[in-house]
Length: 148
Image: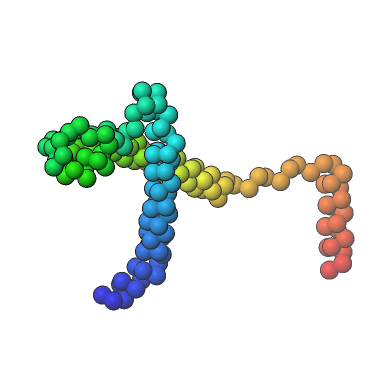
């Protein structure tokens, strides 16, 4: 069993997976920053200055009564809230990551198809020789035959 695990780990599957997870986590951080810092502020501005991160519904008031200006204030007061604005941000982040991964996989597949087509293409046939080239070839072959 140890031998099988060693073969699995050494073949590169585990290493490839680990690299993918690390890059995916870093990419997720970039997308989160893109969504929260660049995409959502203009959308919120267009919708009347709404910050999606602070869109929530109070299910049960906390120690201080509602209304709460921000999600952080509601959570500080101990209110039970449904933070659906954060959910919207997360869904948008997911869609961006999914689209980026789709485009990357599509690009990889095209590269593989192009490489496969190049590998299966037959080499081009040699062009027809001109009359001069044919005559020179015959002379060369005759000289080789005479030298032997």
